[in-house]
Length: 221
Image 1 (cartoon, rainbow, N blue to C red):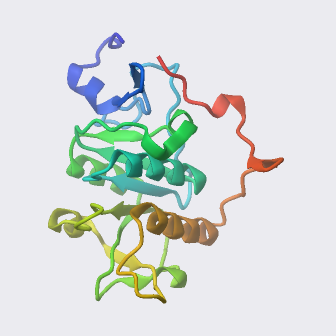
Image 2: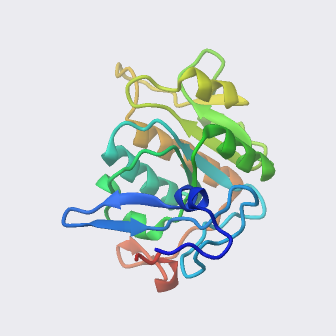
Image 3: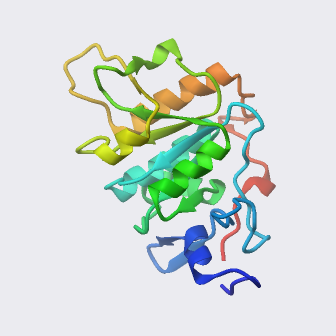
């Protein structure tokens, strides 16, 4: 895919995520963003993520180990109105997202610092999803406005760098003897609580599924 006039190769990698297909490698442009201004499209025919005027949620995906979990997390973010932010150079497969990747535009940054700068420009607090002594139970909905949620690695949880960028932490109370929840399940519960708190409009339903207008599908090259 050619670069637009004025765009650099670094901008291209910032805005493109490569996802291998079973039969061939397809290139999906999830976001068209220059990290210096967060608004310049490299190719206008691709859909950009929608950022709500108020109480937008973001999901920062950094250091995810499993491709399937990455796909599930994209699908979950979409379902609950969150804007996914992918950090780093790792190439993920679509995994468990099914057709969700074609419906889920994301922002992509090379570094965590760039992602933090971006969400702060949208006046978002950063909440880590982690079982910690200072974490607040998510059912109390300790939200005050736009919020970026950070999830950790499946095995190790949030690392020190991820914890350092968080303003606060939330956790999900459990009532059995499992030590923790699957990363996607935990993220879904938290994002659902935020969507309820933010009073997001429910998506329309058609039959036994939620309805997706054709223009909402992200085009593939």
